[in-house]
Length: 312
Image 1 (cartoon, rainbow, N blue to C red):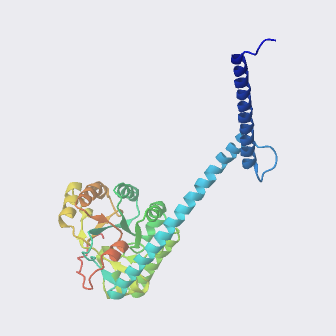
Image 2: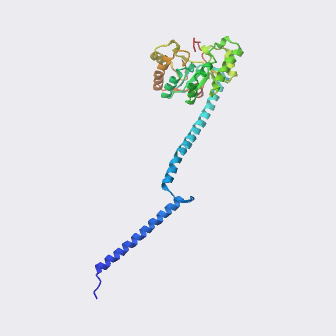
Image 3: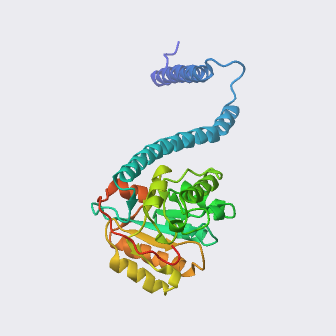
């Protein structure tokens, strides 16, 4: 009887060992796969379809994104509510203090750009320019213009600008009695709120024509009378470069700047605005609404008088 070949016996042993290892590995892989499927499928009935699951996740993604956007919008609105509350409180303090303002304090390097006699066909372009330079402004609007141009003012509020009262149809209130003054103010408020805009808390008398009666009636309506400290004289249609240069030469912290977005040809104002904004930004100024200006730069009790203009 022949003896077994040692090399052959060793090869056979190695072969069986490899088969056992392979079998154990395959069994482990199957077990892991089964656990994975079971884990994914826990709590669900029927067969598990990876493609269907992927499609379902894709379908849920837009909903989740919308919900995230809604939560972000809610946070922004809540923050803006608090800001408006603080700004309104600042306005109310000045109403109680004097009822009229032409300039804020100098604490912060901020100015308020204001536009009268709109809205008009020029207002949209002015809003575009303000948005480009991340600037805020205050628009003193005429009630009889709102019905024709409601969208610019709705956009203005949505983009963080303030809307004030400039009467119904631009009458000189110093020539009217108390009842007619109240009507001019109230009709403008009705026009604004009728377009889902907030009731104004700021008032600017046409032509800058003001007396104790006008200030008292504005205060009675919960509004602060807002004049100005820097008149651009844009109604005279100067060259855009000259108009901007005047503002940049005379500007001071707390200034309230008078311009117009309605009541005539505002091509000059529209062309001067970007030059002005570039210069103010370069000089370190921040352009804010009148309410924000009053909050950040509380005004002095004593205010300079303002010379009336032919068009303001």
